[in-house]
Image (cartoon, rainbow, N blue to C red):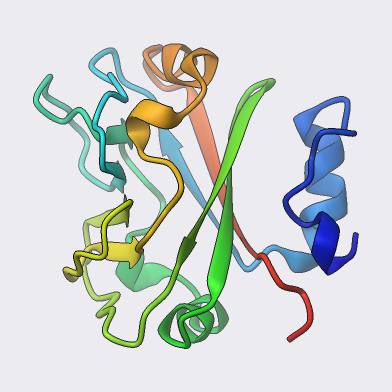
Amino acid sequence: MDAQKMLDFTSYRNVDEILADLKPYILDMVVSYGHPNVRGTHPTTLEITKEDFLTLRGTCIIGINASKSVKDLNCKLKDLIRAGKEIGVLLKVGPFWDTFTGFGDQNLELANSVSIVFRKSTFISDRTVLIACIKSAQDLSRELISSLQTPNQILELYFFPVDTEK
């Protein structure tokens, strides 16, 4: 897979083929779980949390009981984020998947010990991992979101570089 193809997944038959090709480039992976209250309707953010509950007000939260928070992400990924690089994200729930990109920024703290938040805006907090993302919770595949309404459904989140020419 070359740099130009890092975001062109149209020729793949399924998400497992995509992951097989992405494997050498994956910077980090986070596992979280679905919940009956997953709505995925927030227009500007998307969130994964280590918390074990979700209220109906958490319209940006698509996964709970996450294996990592933004603070726990690996150092190589954090370095690329702080260098302002464009980062790709692949979300996998069973056979359903979606991808999006966002940008790092030197001002991102990457310090929160509970959540990982992706933002369409350029707002920065200690929970923010990427800004200027091309998708928020409401833009994700509805099949993926519906699957996440099943308790304990596994959500795998993969980070990868958009430009492999490092």
